[in-house]
Amino acid sequence: MCNDHYHPQLYADPDTTVLPKTGFSLDPSSAALVVVDPQNDFLSPSGVSWEFFGESITQNRTVENLGLLLAAAKSSGVTVAVSPHYYYPADHGWTFGGPLERMMHDIGMFDRKAPLDLEGFEGSGADFLEEFKPYLLDGKTIIASPHKVYGPETNDLVLQLRKRRVSQVVLAGMAANLCIESHLRELLEQGFEVVVVRDATAGPRLPEGDGYLAAITNFRFLAHALWTTEETLTQLAQAGAMHLGGQANETR
Image 1 (spheres, rainbow, N blue to C red):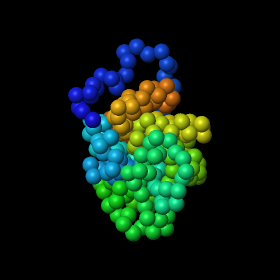
Image 2 (cartoon, rainbow, N blue to C red):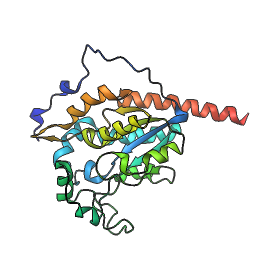
Image 3 (tube, one colour):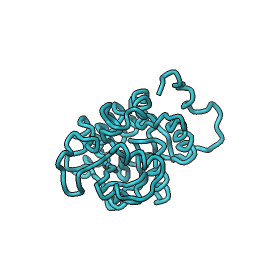
Image 4 (tube, rainbow, N blue to C red):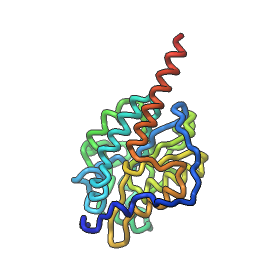
């Protein structure tokens, strides 16, 4: 897609708003950073979907912002969870699917050899972006089972969060109008408070439309808060201070 069609003001919040503020406040004891699909096929220039998502990822500095969020969440002691997307050979036996599903299957997006076989997985499109691995593979991050279309209804993300008494989710990752919006909607229906980090995601730009613009509009209507990465880092730093303060009180 052509940069000539990129107009940052399209994504800016309106000067005048009607919808009320929710009064959301981050509680580090019940919050989790949930990162959706931090995988090469989305976020790497060598990924199979970069042609469609690369401009938005670059302009939002999505990869850099996700790295900052992961580092801050780990430092603050906030739970971190990943909802990944994998396709196994049997999944290609599906007999119907939506347009994006069909495209993902056609281009081999998120493909793995088998559910229990990691041959060829390292560095593949389905693998996590290399720079995120120190945070995601530390043995503490929740790696949920894979979702199969867009939302977490088909994986164990909600169970994993409930088992840690998480009730607030800071949501980031890919892609804005697809898996992020679907995760947002389902988590809201499940009773979570959800913040979306607006520049730690991105969307496709196709002749059919600007996916990121569509998502931002819906985030304003649905999310309990819509933060930038900078705003989120401030909140996580405050959460970390509260967490450390609580630990100090427990040791007295």
